[in-house]
Each structure stands twice: as C-alpha cells, then as structure tokens.
Length: 141
Length: 438
Image (cartoon, rainbow over all chains, first blue to last red; front, side):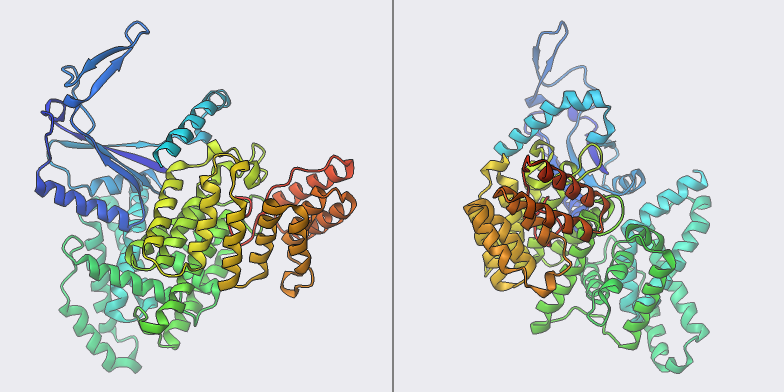
C-alpha cells in the first residue's frame, strides 16, 4: 500500500516568499530521504514553496474565486510530501517517526486510494480522471 | 497500546530493521544461520518486552544490542566446543565492538553488510529455491509462513529449505563477503536472477487460481530498489529495477473485472501506474548513462519502455522491439526470447513473418511442453485465417498451462476460432521477457 506523508511545518502559513529551511535541517532531512530511498520504500518526494507565493481558488457560489497567498484563515499548510510504498499502516507510521522533525512540524500520514477502494459508480466516474492523469504524466515525462 | 497493536508495530520495525540486523550480526559471528537465530531471539525479546515498555526510540539499536548480548551468551555457553578457539576470538570480537548506533554508523558499513548478506543468500552453492527462500527471509524480512503462502507450498517445506540452506552455507564455508573482480559479474547475475524470479512468481503465478500475487512483486521491487542504491555503478542493477517498475506499472490493467488476464495490447492504458512508469524510465536512463553494451536486463527494460511510451497499443514501435529482442537473443540466446521475437516480428512485419520465426522453434526440445509456443502459434495462425490449425494449437496450449485463469482465456480464444469469428490477438504472456501480456 502507498502512503503520502505530508509535512506540515508550523508557521509556514505565514512564511515570506522565498523562505528557505535551515541548512542544518535540510542536511538531516536529506539523510532521512536517503534512508527511505536505500530501504526501497521511497517512490517520490517534493518540497513546496510557502503559500505566500501560492494562490487559492475557492467556489463559494459554485463560481471560482481566486485569492492570493498568504491565506489568513489557514492554520496548517503543507510544506512538502513523500510518497512511500509499505506493507502496513504501522510501517508507514514507523517511517514517519524517523523523520527528523522540528518541534513545530507535523507529519500527517494518509493512505493513497486505490481504484479497488472505490465503489462501482465512482470507478465509472473516475475513468475519465485516470485518462487525464495519463495525459498529464505523458506531458510531464 | 494493546498487545495486537504492539505486535503490528513490532512487525513493522522488523520489516525495516531485520535485514540490517542480520547483516551486521553475520559480520560479527561469521555465520549467517547463527546471525539469523540471534536476530530472531532479539525479536522474541521485543515481543515480550515492548508491549509493556513501549517501542524504544531507536528500535534498531535495541534489537542489535539484545542480539549481541545473546551472541555473547551463546559463545559463553560454548555450544560449539569443536570450534572453541575460533569462538573465543569471536567472543572477543563481539565484545570489542561497540553497539552500533544506527544513526551514526557509517552508511557504507551497513550497505556493505547488506551486500554481503545478499550475495551470501544468493550463493551458487544453494539451489534456486533455497536462494529465493533465503533472500525473502533474510533480506525481505518475510516469515517462513509468508514465504510458504506466497509460493503456495506447505510451511514446513519452506522451513526445511531455509534450515538446509543455512547448513549448506556453513558446511561449504561460504565466506561472508562481496565477490570481487571477475567473479562479481556472474555472482551479480545470480542475485538479479533471484530477485526477478520472485517478481515473476508474483507477476504471473505459475500455479494457483489467481494469476498475480502483488505482494511478491512489491517485495521484489523493494529488493531491486535496495540493490540499485547499494550498487549504483552497475547498469544491470538499474536495468532490472527499470524492468520491474515498468512491468509493475501495468498490474492494475492486467486483470479484468472477473479476475481474468488482460493481454498487454488489450489493456486500458489509462490504468497503468504512471508514477512507476516514470520511475522505470528514470532507472533505464540511469543504466544507459553508465554506458557499455547493454546487458539482458537493460535490453528487457528497453523493450518494456517501448510499450510504456506508446500511448495507444497501435503506436507501439514493434520494429524497435523486434530489433531489441534480436539483440537480446544475441547476448543471451534462448528459445523463449526467440518466441518473443516472433511475436514482435509478427506485429512489425506481418503474421506470416512471425509464423516463420515460430516454426523454426517447433523442433526446439526445451520448448516441448511449454504452453506459450502453441499459444503464440495459435494466435498467428488465427490471424492468417487458418482457424482449424489455430484451434488445435490453442487447445494444446490450454492443456499445458498450469494457471487456471490462463486456461480459461485460451479456451475462450478456441471457442472464437470454432465460431470462425477469428480473434483479436494480444501478445502472449508468461515469458521471461516483457513483450508478453503485461
């Protein structure tokens, strides 16, 4: 099964554009990433710029409304993620526990939905979505 | 934490730590069998203590410290009097070495130990079955029961296989080391072969009702990724990783709603896993960047990549695939590769051209009893409209396969031939090469 480990760094919701993590923390994180890679569990990972350079698109009346970051109302924002392949939820937790997290950081674990997890109706509706994903992936490749 | 929760958490720790633990212990006691016993003893201790005390902060170091204490006890008891002198030396060695702290231990050291363990588990002195069982057990962290279930054999059979394998290694005095120089190439091939064998057993089960056992594929992929990080300078290691990533990317599309196999060319490509495809293509690129003449895994990965890159089945570059199979047949001649080439030639240059290649193989003794020969021949004959001959071949193929799902598929094709409606043929499955169903 696949899990996404979401890094939620406290205070990142207010971080200024171009905010960079402490080199020391990066070093520890790189070692951790390497550990995941060497164990054969890491599938993908990315770090995200702070929300101050991002945007949110909401749909209050079914119509898109764009607001630029930072987002005053946001209490938690994502700073990055890892995608891992593990045998159990416990294994995902064990890996997350090894993350060299700082006191204000939280790692949230979320299992990736597989097509098998969906009901037949949803599978049907999702067929178009997987095609889209394929096109996106091909453009990215 | 309830006992069940604790046990599940310990299972997870074991899966992460066991290979490193056994690998490190084996270096100290110079005996893989003893190292595994000691590691098991530390696991038993964890199962006894952790539900009460909670999981320690550094569970790997805890297990190692416990196992080392057991090692010292073991040598003190002098259970192996005939090797007393050697043991005293070992005891000293065990005592002298500080408990390795997994955080500060040099990654290189752990990596070297893991490599030693892999090469030992896949040592040519062992039978293939023993290598597979030992690799899954020592490197994959699987229990004997898990291995038995994965391979549909009784647990005592696997247990016995492992006991015998350990004894064979001890009796043959197999050194705990990574082979060097000229020996390395052949020994590395043996390692890769074991990993790919595990993958294939999961990918196209040779027996049983299901035609895939994804758990085994995942175990093999994990092993392949580990070895790729341990030996980044070896192109074939990346070739195997690429091959498995790309093949695994099709898992979801290979099975229909009723559990029946779906052949490569008939698969819904939107169901392929594009994360794995990207990983596979990246691994292939890594292999190709290292240069040199491509080895068998790099070539097979290149073939798999041709399929992965084709958005629709009709866009497949069969001419290139046929050429890659020819190259593969040149460096690793095999009737099975030739059979795959026949399929590619049939699709690149027409069924008649493919049939000509297949017909060359009909007298091949090693393919006698191999269901894919009549299966491929049947497909090609059907395409040429020679339906009666096609039906005979498909019937033969159905009688030869051991997989229930595949037999059903062949019977279905036969029925279509009987109706005279012809069949839309895909590439046959099950060969060691990826030009097959998926």
